Image 1 (cartoon, rainbow over the protein chains, first blue to last red):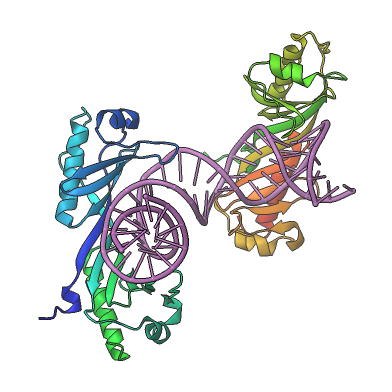
Image 2 (image 1 turned 135 degrees about the horizontal axis):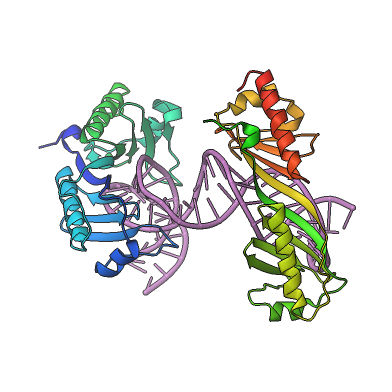
Length: 186
Length: 186
DNA sequence: CAACTTTTTAAATACTGTTTTATATCATTT
DNA sequence: AAATGATATAAAACAGTATTTAAAAAGTTG
């Protein structure tokens, strides 16, 4: 039984930012949290990695943090709470209710049929397409609405990135499937 | 309360030269003064740094020196005297009264209102203007009298450099404000 | 002889690096 | 022959570096 492209979507990564407090002593955090990475000459933030859910956090002196790697909004939220707890355990005053903003969602999808990227490259709006197979095997398609970037591969697999909410990827896939059908490429 | 542009001037850096004696043994100076930098294959002068006032000095074998970093004529003078003392302490005969010549003064100013650099670029004398925002965000304006170069930024902040005396920057700002008002850009 | 070396300083831009993740090609490297 | 490591995409956080301007000194290089 074949799955429709718009039903094949899978969130692969969510990037979100949040402000957990107004100031954080990074050297202190880096030394007290096992596994924390901190190399200020390389990067100004402390890198913390949680295992369940598997999420990486970039923690900054400003009290702002960035979470990456979450595969669902729920796990993202859970990861932020875990991070808050880790910092709270260090004696830092961190609110129990933490707010965050999703900055990017990376989603994968599958057209379930191979596609000819060369034909798509000429059939689609040239100034929204970039296809240089000798540089990268995927065709880069920049959508305006929703504002996302889609990578199309000859296998029919797609990567939708740049979205702010799950629905963006869905809309992008529906639009692309529609466009490909209209020019008879799938 | 708004400050007039011509009252917002602040000297950010003064570069001056002086001759403190006829000959200086640079290897000796470099080895005896803590923190001195001397790499003759990189640069022919010894670099000395004073902390209060924070001024850097380039000392040459000819007995000539260059002072940079002073934020006022007074601190520049004080820095030169400190430098003279440092060399004198090494047993070198340095006059107590040292003369110097200001070679460049860098001054900052603020129009206190944002300005449209694109309009200024077309409204001002083209051959005295350089504006390539993709290369540098500031508009470069070369004044003839006083002979200085002014960098204008969209924020309304200005940098006046190339002047030989404090008054040069003041005159330049007054002239620019006048010019901008005459073409109705501020 | 011209141009670059070094030092200082402000302004405001772009851009680098770090983290994550799927996808799929190529070039290296064990 | 597997296994890394780019290559390309988006996004935030932010420290740092580059960009530009002027000027002197006294070396080196073209």
